[in-house]
Length: 463
Image 1 (cartoon, rainbow, N blue to C red):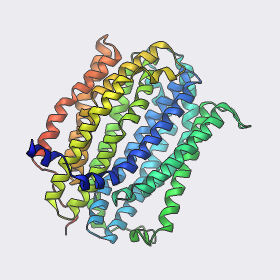
Image 2 (image 1 turned 135 degrees about the horizontal axis):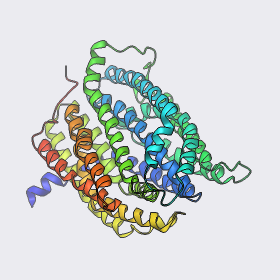
Image 3 (image 1 turned 135 degrees about the vertical axis):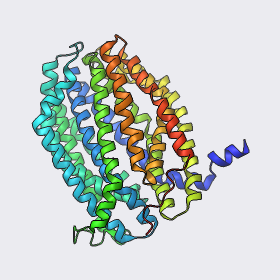
Image 4 (image 1 turned 45 degrees about the vertical axis):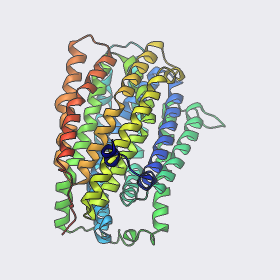
């Protein structure tokens, strides 16, 4: 027991340092996801078709978020290690690389959604019409999509600066900007969805306009703060005087970071394919899964923040060459993530039938949502382990391994399981959902072996 405590339980100083980084991320994600719940409920008051149309488009936009996250965080491995090594010039090069890569991703995704948005939405409307009208859902989805595309440039620039701050240990300012943005979003949602205080009643279009406004506010807050505090983070000084990056570093960033970009892109595509597989069971499942996903995002903020903490803390230890501290901290962060997820998952399970009652949808969609929430609560400790394991392996630059561990497993195992069960059986959608998660136990075993072998303990910025 003593050995267990020493290996997996930290002292007061350790948890103080951990939560100094993780707590602002938790607060930001918590407020963001809570306001998203309120947004979701507001859209849900318009009807099942409106809620489903918005949910489908958000599933497509999720692909953009993860592609951007993967692209920026791939080079962010170097940012954390350069910062840990006190190399300002190295950090500057990573910012310039992010600028170019993010621009390319944004342009590609906008063009795809402009020309193929309708066809992509229709992929989710091939099941039964139980719970709503497919044609109306498509119309609402398209109207929402055309407006939400204006948001993408703001997300790109906001993530560029916020991710760099986080990788250097500054999580408070991204939290503040995120909190401001979600309240702006909430206020304008209320005004524009329902036409309050003289504003036009725009329905789902109003929800999209509110989201676009909030993202530009978030971007502006971060950028203004960065350029008014350049003394604190000297690597922002003159960072954009040139956009040139040494070719040798471009190759290095590309080789290490591209697998993460591809991984996040394919993983998000895999998630979209899973949602499409569940949608075969009907529009009620689309609505129910949307509700369950929104609720799950509120409850999983702790282990999500732990993953970010792993990327920051372990990345800086590795950059400084302190492998012993990196290993010790990683064990304790993963243990903390699993333990807290057991408690939070229990609370989520106990309250699983309460949240769906807040939505203006039919009883069948509410029941499906409740069943999905129960499954998500049960598997939360598994998800916590996989999430922190992924970020551990990634912190050491082993991005090919994370690619195989994450998206390849998703496309080779999870998606085929969902495809076969949804199309060739009559199993309930929630049972299919549970069996897909059960397949992740194989992935847990692989993750445990990789952590045990210390394949992630590398300094990738050492000359």
